[in-house]
Image 1 (cartoon, one colour):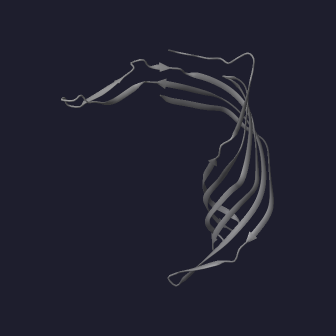
Image 2 (cartoon, rainbow, N blue to C red):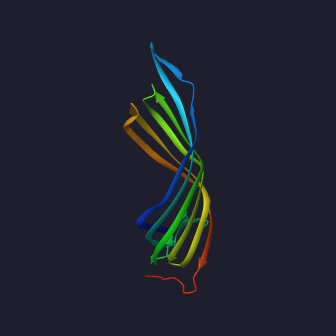
Image 3 (cartoon, helix red, strand yellow):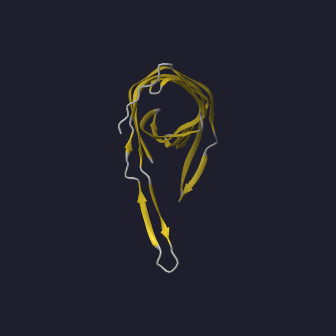
Length: 199
C-alpha cells in the first residue's frame, strides 16, 4: 500500500507580526592566529520575543494505492525448494480532494540571533526560535469540519552576512525546522464530507 499527496496554497497572508528586542550581548573578541595574521572574531547575541498571526487558503489532493503481493519458499521432502511469488491483480486508486481555509498563530518565547563577525564586518550567524508554539484552526471540506492543531516546533536559520559601515553587502541564509508531535482535535460537521472515489 502506498500513499501520495499534493498540496497547493492559493494564498498566504500575514495579518499581524510583532517582534520585540529583549537583550543585546557583545562577547569578548576571540583572536585566532592564521600564520602570523591575527583574525578577530566577535560573538554577538541578540534576544527577541515574537508573535505572528497569518491566514492561508488552498487545496489538497490525496490518493491511496493498494496492491497485495507475497513471496516465499516451499520445501517438500525429496524435492528442491521452490520460490513462490504471487499477489492480487486488483489495483484500487482512491483520490480525495480537500479545500481548506486556515488561521495560524505563532509565539516565539525566546529568539536568539547569534553572529560570529570576523573583524566585525562578516561572518556566519545562527537564528533559533526556542521554543516556538504554533496553533492552527482549519475549516475544510473533506471530511467537512473544523480541525485544531496545537504544538511546539523549533525553527531557525543558518546564514552568512557581510557588512560594511552597517550596510549589508551579502546576506544568504538557509531555513531549518523541526516539528514535534502535535495535539489535534477534529470537530465534524453534520453535513458530511465530499468524497470522490474511482475504482
